[in-house]
Image 1 (cartoon, each protein chain N blue to C red):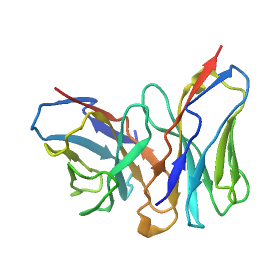
Image 2 (cartoon, helix red, strand yellow):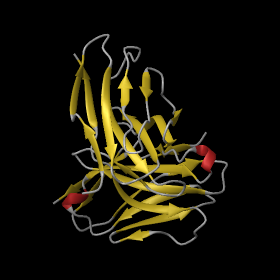
Image 3 (tube, rainbow over the protein chains, first blue to last red):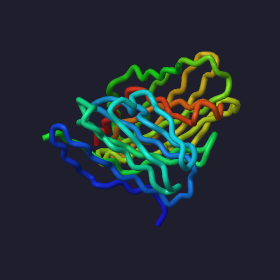
Image 4 (cartoon, each protein chain N blue to C red):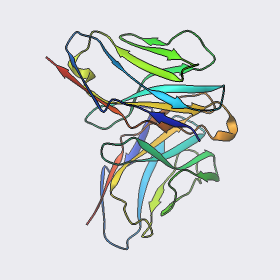
Length: 112
Length: 117
């Protein structure tokens, strides 16, 4: 079954803790993206990667880090430097220029 | 930088009727793509329709169609014969056609569609 999976569905973070959100795709797409969605708002780009071992900052990268060691995986770490991490996080993958981005089901991050 | 604006926070439509959602965008580029995504209560983002800026013909997908006005930088979505399952948040999104832009999507703030039975 092709698609994008994200885990966990819900994640709780304690103050000062780093947490990692998983994103895996079996669509064989080169490009992957992380977006953040706050209540009642649209999505904002955190980081993106157009190819393995390469990634670029998006519009709101501060307090986040990523890696792209494998084509199918693009994990996002929310570091303790991110002071307001409570949000819904969406991962997407796309084949390239002009191609549609497809989204995973999302991870909801809450701060304890 | 490009911006996308959806001026209608919420729209209500009677089942089987038609509703039109507005979207305007600001860009200095001539080649780009425009999208409408649907986000139901599950929060999964689902592609509804896509439009290439170089195509004059408006895109259509079953009950969904767009009115693309390039000169006016307007990209509205029309939902015909509305169904209860159409109730969701709808987001308009822009993407540059240039490789250097990284295929990033810029989203509007969304329009909530309510469908009355």
